[in-house]
Length: 529
Figure (cartoon, rainbow, N blue to C red):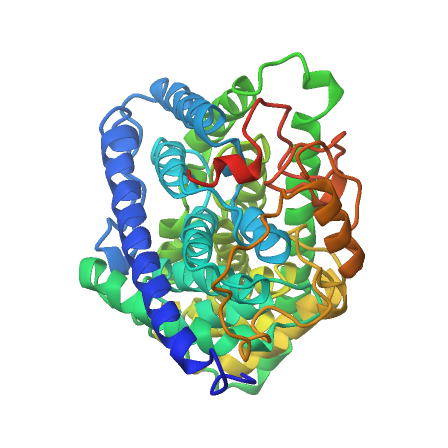
């Protein structure tokens, strides 16, 4: 990290990363507890169904069945209704999966995330996922901790570049904590901002913030890898290498299908055909469908992490029909696209891990009777997780490391790298996160990528907010090529760059999340949260 020892270097980033990491760890721990509580009170307490859990969370190995099957679709729909109503009423920018909002804020308005976002996102996501909605915990955590980092940057009056770094390391710290993968989280903070580039200046502060966050989170939830220490990952037979390209190809195709299905679903729910339907009812109707699907394929309800955990069990996979294993990744894609693409508050990162894990288990199940697979599906599951999500999220290095950390096993780094590289070639420029810029040349501030301005001291005087006077905004846009796009009254951007800070002129199937016009204060007036 250039300039870390210069003015505003270590003296700034060590305490700032420590503070951001501590806040992120506390927020991630609170969110994890709320998710567990929501699941116990709603899906288990009302519908009588308990989803399989993770070894690292002492969860049950098997699902418990449906004593009241008619209740499940109604419960999922009700959870979606309550979560969406809360978001639309208090903080509309907290709708959707959250990661795109965090990435957009890091690029375009790093001090503009409102202080109310973390609490709203936390409760809304806990209700939606806890009632059975299909979504992950990473996306909400990313927005929660990025918003906390944005508040920190605003309170300390950091410069624009320093605030971008702070938001990026907040995102990294949150994800690193919730997945108990501090190194993977730090790398994710650097990779997730771009489709074909990294932000090298983010890595060092993100490493410190992610380590502190993991320490704080572990004090409440333990330090064991979420999937436990996975055994049976031997990779010593030459024939196994022939399967790696197949896993990479399949993971890349599933990644493309996941992104296409998600954004097509989001476009459908934002289309003119559904404009007359109140926005709060769109996730509600999607919840009815997801709950009905869950009766047939229980593994799609909630986060689905327990389904990925079960994929490591050879006996469980051999007892499962090949057709069921082949269907689970596809059904998870559809259910997540419905729950989150309709405007529900849940993540799409975690489901990507589940999709890759179950796809790897399906390949193992097909090859095992032929004597072409190892005795355990674990190698294929780990490689599938890394390749599927690493390719479509454009974070290959982070996901290879994260797959190793979450399973407590480093023996599959090289085959995971190879499969992920092949999957990235298949995915091409497609992405799961539309707020990603292509590379650092597209940065709103041409001076540097996030984190490269570490040598500059913090701004201690008054700063011009993102929604400053028109003349100031015009001057800022002229100084920053690529940012001067059409804007609405109040300085909020239109079109593709509206993200979570404004309402665009129109929405198409290629845009997400699709908020409708709402009366809300300007960013400068609402920052007090």
